[in-house]
Length: 254
Image (tube, rainbow, N blue to C red):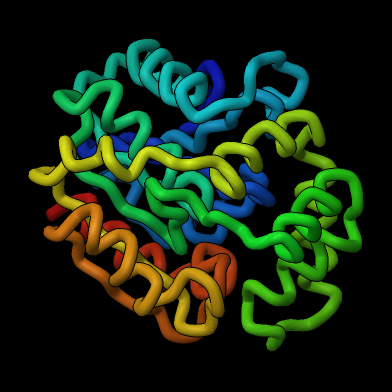
């Protein structure tokens, strides 16, 4: 089932919008979705402007714009209240949605999520990500590193190729400025202190792990629950889809 700007899965009473990471593709959620109860959940896989089915949609490519698009999607679906699930940069984006409409968002689930402070990449790392906007080989190196350099080159190449097919470089450059080198908006999320938050990180993710989540997500959201997923790096929905689905369904239906 499809909706404007999203693909729907399930028809259950618990609603949530899924937001991709920077190298994300809509079908990266598919294995995880197959392990969820469609009678319990209804999930909308959202496409940012410049991504996926909205690859050719123009925009400013900012998280404020994405947040407004998420709310427009929820309106179109008739969802008054809903949860948000954000992978990687989607963790930052989902907090912008919650700040824009706190009365509508029921809870947050971050998968290897970038915090509201952004990643604040140093010079060499930022240069690699900027190179990856145009270079699929640089994307493959990022995937390999972020999954702990433990997965096959063919798999890492496939994720990089998926992003090349799905996402427009101009859009990737815009979102990178938001989460990679921008100042973030950590000072604003104090307004979300009462919102239930869970953060799931891959045990093999060298950058977004329990230690870094403790210093960022727990700092910004003292109520957050943190959990590591064995057998996963930066892409839990792909590397450990059943375990990720189990944790996601438990959280969203609590």
